[in-house]
Length: 447
Ligand code: SF4
Image 1 (cartoon, rainbow, N blue to C red):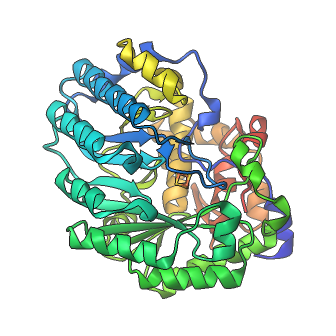
Image 2 (image 1 turned 45 degrees about the horizontal axis):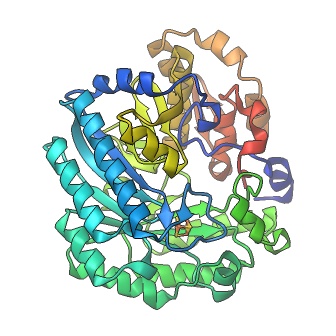
Image 3 (image 1 turned 30 degrees about the vertical axis):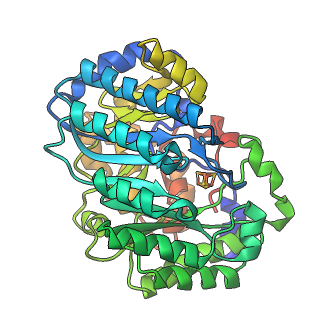
């Protein structure tokens, strides 16, 4: 990426895991809407995302909804709230069918194996899993012992996502996360031996003290571990939103030019290593379901990143979890204590959200297609949404500048993101987002 492009696009832009983004959620949507909208899911196959907002200790770079909680009583009471929320959902929509189940966090294993088994049993008892596909869990390799792996196998986990971020010791010290290659290799070996064969690794670029050389070494070591998928995210330095990031010295962060070069290095190294780029920041072996979904136009974008299209609705369980329902989005209280109090009182814990309008659905489809396939037939989408293409495009005022900068090419009624524009696809999406000007301070930088 040339210096002029880097300078022009080194500014905040949403990640577009949804449209409208979570920045647009508001408190007028809450438990009433959640309870009313859930029954729309009857007899369709949905995903369950279950959030555990606890870790043994905190990494300074992390922007997840999580806190360091180790007290067994706190963990057990959170698990009891999850059981109650599962019951609330199952009572509200008894015909819910659950395809994939994703345990995320935080660190799900922090819940403890006994609590994990209780929650898994309740999920199995209350939800119809006949359309079941994957059951995945995020894993911290530093805490992946035999007991955890046995529990994961016993509750049917068949994909594990392991957080790595970076293997360089200087970088690890700067983010307060010491984790050797051996820790990660041992965890992967344990998981594979137990039959949990699908392995994802998460890496991050743009971290403090990271250089192209350290990143190249990390990528080589990670490829050696032969996971099925990589997710490689750009570090989002948002200390005004995540207080723990104030412990990171801003002077130790790579420049925008370095970050652009790092993104390029990641793509080159992983593609040379036999992976196919999927969307903006995922990589998968050519035979992996994510790669084949991308190849056949079945890739979707969700709050969990890129996913295979077959279960568009997501039921979020746990503190801060977001549900993506046919009529809109709802989000649970981020504070675990508030979440517990609400659920224990027999209420849904939704505290904010958004009801989708017809215009949101049109713009959401365009943005999702751009994020997933880098091209869109605008004429086709507008006709299906019964909106005249001409008047719609009159409102997309920033598109000509993106065309002029070579990020995107118009071909009749279609739009194609160019190879040069792919790393900046979020800016192409932003052209279709009328809210973006009002929320700039809340997003990470686009490079
Ligand atoms: S990166 Fe993972 S282990 Fe570290 S604080 Fe975030 S969720 Fe916890």
